[in-house]
Image (cartoon, rainbow, N blue to C red; front, side, top):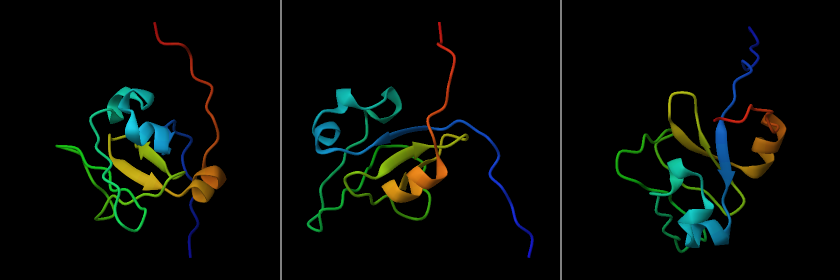
Amino acid sequence: MAQYRRKPIILEAFQLTNENIADSSLRPDWARDFSFPLLESGIVAPTTPGAVIVNCCMAASISDWIVRGISGEISPCPNDIFNLSYEPAETPDVV
């Protein structure tokens, strides 16, 4: 079977916290219109009009990361997988 390596791309992401669920100003601009209704299971389901949802649903837990991909797609990523897959990127300041 062939093996593949991820291309080095820079994604935008933020980690879900109780604070940024309650206060959207603590989230990046692209995620401020999201609502995060807390489900009985303690899992949140981010929703926003016009959001592109992948993997058929958008359920995430506190400490999961919400990632915006290179095509603008939004998906949750568990904290442990995020930490194994990504590292902070050095990006130039945008003026």
